[in-house]
Every structure is written in C-alpha cells, then in structure tokens.
Image (cartoon, rainbow, N blue to C red):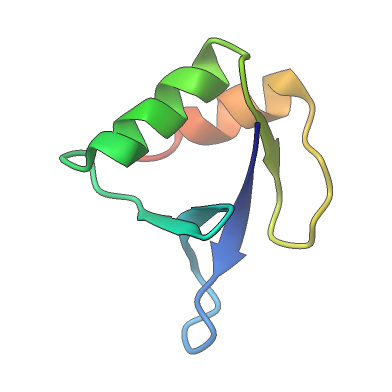
Length: 68
C-alpha cells in the first residue's frame, strides 16, 4: 500500500494525500486520514513525496509527526 502526498495546484502546499482514486484531506476527524497515519506509523504502508519519490519508513514517520 502506497500513499502519495499531493500539492494543491493553486497554493502549492501539500494538504492532502492520495491513495489510488481516494483523496484524503489532512483532517484529524477523517477516518481515512486516521488510518493513513496509523499505517505509516505502523510501517504497513509507504509514502511518496509530491514528486513521486518513495520516502524511507523513518522519513514517512517523521513527516506524519508534523501533521495535525
């Protein structure tokens, strides 16, 4: 399972993650967002940056720690 960070076309900020056709906003009340964070922290999923580069498990965990 691989998630990818996506930049907003207008603001160029990363404020959501893509998984297949599912777009997940960085909203702590969103259950898909909660699952994304848990899977990254449990190292059962991988994370790509907005340029499509695969992050190491530790880089992904560190990035997720900065999110709301």
